[in-house]
Amino acid sequence: MSLSYIFREMLRPFYLLVGIFLVSISPMFTSVSGLQWPGFQAIGEVLQKIMSPGSLIYTNPTSGVERDLFPIIFKPFWSSMSVIGIALIVSLTSALFLSILLRFVSGRLYKGIMSIASIFQTIPDVVYVLVSQMFLVWVYIQTGVKFAKFTGTGTEEALLLPGVVLSLLPFIYFLKTILAMIKDEEGEPYVDLAASKGLHKLRIVCVHMLRNLLVRLAYQSKFIISLMISNLLIVEYLFNNFGMTVFLLNYTQPPVFFVTAILFFFPIYVGLKMIEGLLYLMTQQEVSL
Amino acid sequence: MKHIWKEPTFLLGFVFIAVMLIGSFAHALFFDSMIPKTPFTYDENGQLEGAPPFAPFDHSILGTDMAGNHLFFYILMGAKYTILGTLAVALLSFGLAFVIGIPLGFVQKIKFFQGFEQVISVMYFIPASLIAYKFLKPLMIEPYDGFPTTLAFRITVEVIVLALLLVPPAAILMANETSEVLKKEYVTSSRVLGGRGWHLFRNHLIPQLKESWLRLLLMQAIQATLILTHLGVFEMFFGGTHVVYGIVVEPPSPITFDWASIIGMYYDTIMTNMPWLIGVPLLFLVLFVLSLIGITNGIQKSLRASKPEKDHSFEDMELKQADPSDEKWFELLKRNA
Image (cartoon, rainbow over all chains, first blue to last red; front, top):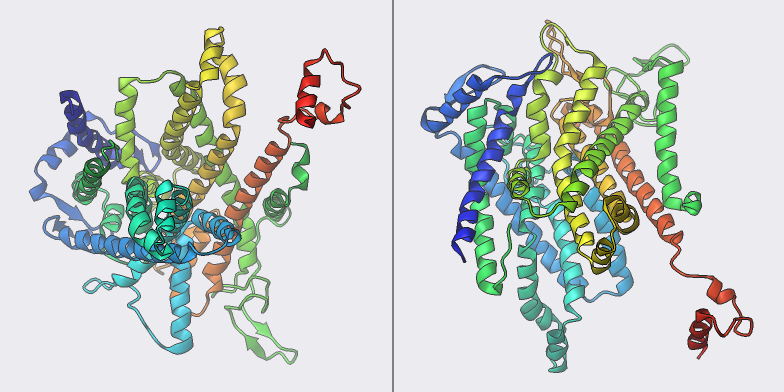
């Protein structure tokens, strides 16, 4: 932990800020007739507005109504965070459960599952969302049972269903990764030792392998988060949820986008950094997430 | 590459894409992209029998929408834009990533590049389709007095923007892979012996990395499909969204009718009992992605099959015919022992 290392780590969020700023001013470079150069003055004005986030207002593009950004912004924030949380919990637990069950299957079935999973992984996420919505409509028409709230209507939003739909793609990814890791861990000496001591297969998996699996899975957390955010955008849009990503999609004023994006991505970034720190404490390995 | 036509996955994917493209262009050339319409059907007595929407196989092969437009011809019309647009984005972004990534792999550890990589890592958090939507919105949504730009211009800009969005991760991946290969021992010794850039590229990088480049090209194509589908759902259709500012409120309609935009156009009908309107374009998108995967797997397999790994002259050579002074003779002895 030298001084330059700390300096480098301190600089990292700054780079991220630059990136978000570039994305937030990007709409200024296009106009109806093509590309344009907005001029430094316009960019400077955006910077000025960002400096006073408390007084930011956002304009509804269809009705033209102006509202204060704060504190309305916290509503979509909690909506998005709970959808992501539900999805993460559902996908991780079900993938862990299923892969522990599948640990006892033959090699042939394992290969089949892996190839099916990798094909399912490449199918666009829109397909999952739309097919699940079509399925729910079909169930409703057939039976008249509405077993989950379908779309949000402003005040009361559906959170559980978007969460479950959002968990589909991470579930496939988790299942594939965990199965491959279990296969990998089986060759380790500690598994042989545990088996030779007469421990039950299930106990070896659940107690001894699981710890290593979770650590190895944590290394993938940045990728999983990026997968989920991209998926969240389409889930929130199609389920009509008033969430962060839809907010970012609809309100194009650069200062509003910048502040909203920081508010949304900063907790996620901090979370990733905490995982990084935990990994360092547990395994003494430096990773950069 | 000789056996490529014998790979079933390649053949299936290729046939699907080729048939869709040929059909689409034939539809455009000979029928002027006309969409047949069945407003009503009558039985033999002239009595009204049915009104749209018709289910698939009911009156036309893929069904019709509420106005009686045949969905099959929309699919056919959009095929060329979907397929060629996706491939253009994928190839352009792959080419750019290639041109940027490989030289970056040769020059390692540059401070500026690391900072650049950090700025780029914002792409992990902000989805590419969100950036593309925000950036292209003024250009793609028709303003009150019509588009001032041509369709070809909008398509070109959209393809370039999407390709540029896909370049950074691919370029970083390529740079990392290149520098991995260049760090290997035999490559370092090749450098010591005087191998320069082009030699290293041709003799070490291409054989090592060609399969991974192929996978990367596939990934770029899948990513392009994903972004185009997202944009279609957000009602920003490929080549621009036609908006009617008339007295009668009409939903925005696509111009090119690529498959993603058909989904976006019919999304409002999801609550009704017409699942084919969204299901059919979804099915075609999935088939398109699957055929891309099939083509890549086929090429990969035939690449592996045609690798000159084994020297077959060993097997043909009989032990007694071999010259004992030949090195191969010892090899044969060892193998037969």
